[in-house]
Image (cartoon, rainbow, N blue to C red):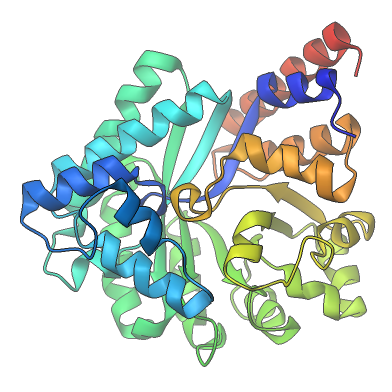
Length: 346
């Protein structure tokens, strides 16, 4: 039950968000302003029109809308604005650290300089850290449908942008017809470059996608990974290896990856001993926030303060930060949670 005390705990608890896309967090009004400013035609003229766009019915429609909306972001200054607006929003939700994904091919295929995009985002995030103390780092999420050859070009930029705060490497996009295995060499190179490894897997394709990600790519985190529940042996392996699933419950419902809250396997994954974290994925697209996702985890899955605290700690311990910085983040989250629980009696 979401009591008053538990709700206050959720609102005020120190949080870490590991699965959120910059392009999917753009506010509707900002989207319209950038479209006008940059002379980009989109099928919406006002906020109500944007909201209508977001009424997609399945994952393919979601991807189409995502790509359409990403076209309004054309300059480094645009990325700086989006990063700053997102970062301030996260800071107000008591997010102490976040890793925000940029989808490189959405911009490179339009001729945009990816390094400029990353530089702009880094500038916005740095301003947020100066103003609020919230740390935000960048992960590059290569669309698997564009293939491994283009992934090498993206990785070259990622290497150069490491000093700007690029800490993670991922593949995303449409799982159907694009398994993880062909990207094994790219992931080996990303690991050698010092990047943390994750992959979207087990969202709309079954356990075979997750097996490919953990065996061929060697990832330490999975974006979604919810279809792992279909393979009991896989659940055991994930728990034994400490592979973390960055779960985004509302996203899974909105894209049709699961049919209902009752059908969502988050509780089963948690009870199986798999390390899970709570995330918002694309807040604008799914009409949510990380705070709201924690609330929904109580309402729909029966989690209490113990489980919420454990998932927040999982996120801090899984951050793609150097060991000393990660330890400091963990200590900050642990201390904040302990003090808050004592204060509120939850």
